[in-house]
Amino acid sequence: MVSVLPTNSNLDTWRDLPAVQQPEWPDPGELKAVVDELSQLPPLVFAGECDQLKDRLAAVARGEAFVLQGGDCAETFAGATASDVRNKLKTLLQMAVVLTYAASVPVVKIGRIAGQFAKPRSKPTETRDGVTLPAYRGDMVNGFEFTPEARTPDPRRLLRAYHSAAVTLNLARAFTMGGYADLRQVHAWNQDFVAESPAGQRYERLAGEIDRALTFMQACGADPAEFHTVEFYSSHEALILDYDRALTRTDSRTGLPYDVSGHFVWIGERTRQLDGAHVEFLRHIRNPIGVKLGPTTTPEEALALIEKLDPEREPGRLTFITRMGASRVRDALPTLVEKVTATGAKVAWICDPMHGNTFEAPSGHKTRRVTDVLDEVAGFFEVHRALGTHPGGIHIEFTGDDVTECVGGGAEISEADLHERYETACDPRLNRSQSLDLAFLVAEMYRQTH
Ligand SMILES: O=C[C@H](O)[C@H](O)COP(=O)(O)O
Ligand SMILES: C=C(OP(=O)(O)O)C(=O)O
Image 1 (cartoon, rainbow, N blue to C red):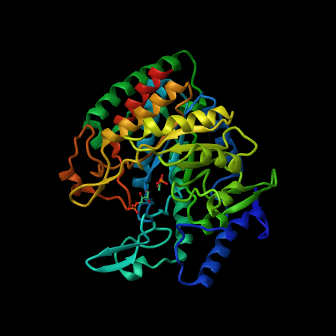
Image 2: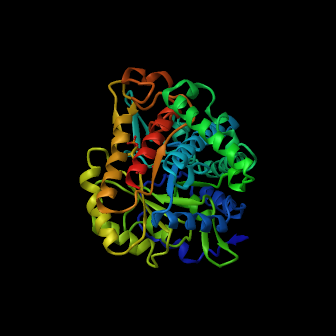
Image 3: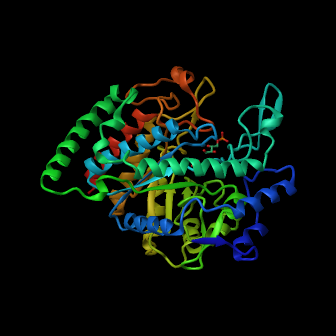
């Protein structure tokens, strides 16, 4: 069990440091009331589950497992429905099955889910037709609609984010533990539009092989529990510090603090300043944590991040999520990996092939080319193969729906098609068949390196 932490612990030292990307809440009194209420609410995850994930990530850092982390760019309150959550899980399960079967590697499944409600932005404001309003920062902060009312940060949204996360995680736990994720369902996950896509058809053949293998094993008397449920973890960017701090509790087993709003939390590329509030806050919680590293990261910064965030070199504690861009990964990543490895630090390396590859289409839609996404992953594998280090996983933005947000892939979505089903609240996501394409490719790359 976890209990509420005292307010004077070192969990509040971040308050004296610069915290970038925080909303300008109009009424500090209302923020305080919300934070007080959040501080009394039950945890969404248990500290023991976070420790279990840390063990799994330690296996990744040792080269024995692979992470599949993904979900929405920005979750919305409206998206906390059974069908949305089920479609995202289906995508994750299908990808995980492809990776586990085709690459023969244990896959650690982490959703960008049940907390991914806040976004860092390049600019604090947005201007349309001469009207300037605060930028949309995610449903946890303000509304997407371009009106002064919607765009004004509203702290009550922190509470809605907590409740939406609770509903979403409850559903995800039910789906993954209650029979839906049973390997016997491997065909059932491949229904609707995806079944017709080339990736869906390839998946169907693989599912047939899995089915035959399961029947054989059952006939031999083997039917392990692992075939019936799935270990699934939640994650989000720990961006709005008032939210993550309010949901930090003392673990009664150990007396140590955990951010119980998600199993894994990460620091973004825009908030990883060594002397900034985000690094300071995450340094004091005991969850497994990640840091995004973009192409301008120096080896000295990476080493200083390790020193601050993982001084004990605890296995599974720290994951570096690199997001270099397809054109930079082959020149920017090697020195980082080399220098970090030389210190003996055992971090897990994960590739985010989305955030370094965004561009604006002539129609004004933010988009990404599937070919760039695949190329960045290929570069990531090449670098690790050359250095003899472990390509530990991928971190992607996807949806279970048939959206048209990224160009290319099996269905060959063109820039002119983007408007058809462009539904993201922030950055463009892979749709389900594009995600499956990626899983097959990653499985092939993994096989070649192992
Ligand atoms: O998802 C990541 C960031 O929030 C996003 O890339 C920032 O986008 P912007 O440049 O439109 O603000
Ligand atoms: C903002 C994100 O990424 P990055 O910090 O790498 O830009 C994100 O993953 O949502």
